[in-house]
Length: 362
Image 1 (cartoon, rainbow, N blue to C red):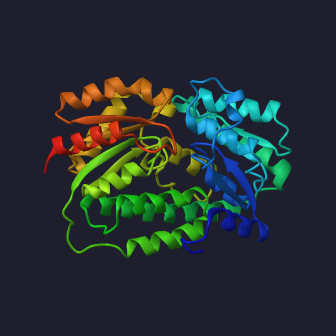
Image 2: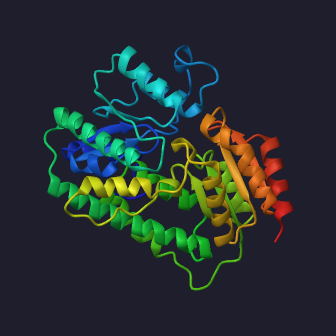
């Protein structure tokens, strides 16, 4: 696949090759399990659809990720997928799972994955492990038996993939990757629908953009759910501001290496989940999130933190006041931008962002 291929063309080719597709809503899910079933997870974050029908099913204070995902289904534009997977990321996505499974006649099976909201302790680990086995049981009812050897191979593929991503983020942190914010995150987001070996090939190509010495730029940390709308990235590029690290739910928050455990692949997947950075959607302690943000900022020599918040995202908004206060107490400036997915940036937001960039200086 080349980067010029469209997402739909790619997915159609994957189906033609005999692979199943599963529409996956944000954000934490054991992708290695799906790969082992020869299922390609197709993540549904910000589909480019105009909202026309979803509002009849949702309260006005539901975030645009949920609204856009439901609209995609209602308009019949997810016809390629063979089912849906709903992780229990937040109450709004849980509500969406109920609407699709209980009230819409999609003709496609729905699967559910309830990751624990407590992120430490043996009971949480046992709960997560139990969720893995339950998901396997449900998938086997529709897609045949899982091959454990194949799952072990998928874990090794995942380790290779995350190794490359980790190298790329380290190069970004040091200013040694000659690529814009827009192009970097465009490539990062292709993991949302590419088969892992195809994605690894694209990451290898991106690694060829390594520089010999750091590029002149100022650095910031970007926090939030996802880098959307893309105009934010373009504006940072125009001002020669590099996103040296991120605290994005679809970025570094869910990046971790899977331990090498050939005898028990489910334990390796469990270990990886509990080794991930703290996250609002897992009810991580605010003190842990603050410490993580401070470390990202210091290690990347960033000038400040930009919180790119999706409107009505309750998990993010609950943590925001204390995170900003904690950053301020250690001399780290921050800016909050609240947007809807796929919206054009307002002049007011552009002005506020430019003022923040001017304030953090050189």
